[in-house]
Amino acid sequence: MSDYDSDGEAPELDLSNSDVVTKYKAAAEIVNKSIAAVIAMCKDGAKIVDMCSAGDAHINKECEKIFKGKNIEKGVAFPCCVSANNTVGHFSPCATDETTLRTGDIVKIDLGCHIDGFIATHAQTIVVQDGDAPITGKTADLLAATRCCYEAALRLIRPGKRVWDVAAPLQKIVEAYGCNLVEGVMSHQMKQFVIDGNKCVLNKPSPEQKVEDAEFEENEVYAIDLVVSTGDGKTKVLDEKDTTVYKRALDMEYSLKLKASRAVFSVISRHFPAMPFTLRSLTEAADKDEKSKDLSKQLKLGLVECLNHQLLHPYPVLHEKAGELVAQCKGTILLMPNGTDQVTKAPAQVVESEKKVEDADVVALLATSTKASKKKKKKAVAEPTA
Image (tube, rainbow, N blue to C red; front, side):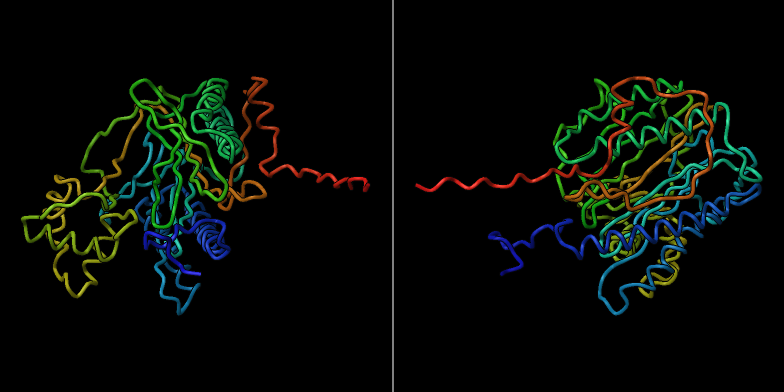
């Protein structure tokens, strides 16, 4: 059989291909090891940039160990971000940043890996503390709400169910814990070299912000992403200079005028053609690239024109109100024929919240299995012969 369809294009690879499943699970295993390594660094006085660099380095080192000799791309699919307290996400600072963690900080660690473009991402929230005492109080309510929302989404994002049916149960859960869903956060379908597919779930839809309804289907892959706040869930950018994570906008074209801009965009196209990257990794790539020596000095100038003409998609560092706390729980799921396969995981602290969900429909949902129910096949009854 031909590897191409009638239009001459290669068919889209999905979970019906066992090699694809293997690559997703290999990426997930690396994510699990890498996020555990970063979580172990969550100590009082730890420098955030060191944690981010360690997460990326761990992913790349583990990728070197697998699929040796194969001509496939592999590495960081989403750069390690470490966002504390009311910082919602995407904080992966430049090398000179001196921001450190302190005891009591609520830290969100988010990262991703890909093997041949097949992506696994995960995020976990950790409280910086000595020992392993259970998390209690307001922080426990926040973490319990976030985890509960994730468990609900895990049961709602499955074949036969629909995008628009996900948000309502999530809202009931956060209300039970006295929290709010953060606006604008989405759970995306992922495909080969596509970290944010068009089919997505908006956790907190509004009249101003909606997504298209659709049915979830077998053999799809999703990054379930839940972000919950003790505040009102509204975010803002405090300083655009904090933005350090970008992704090439593949649907945009423009003839750059400045030499520095063309040089920067050339490095991005060679080293980060589809996946998000940080300014740190871009600087490192430019320094190692024989075609781009001394380019690191012109990066900021070159980036401006690229951004002005939408050639890059920025991931801004968003913040809740000062004094509020934000937690995140993200994981990668494969919608397999036998049910949902949650392939990413991370160490979690014990949480003791005095609040709980009492809505009957949500309680019933959370009690359901994520695996497909096994239906007994009826034996065929032979027709009587004449």
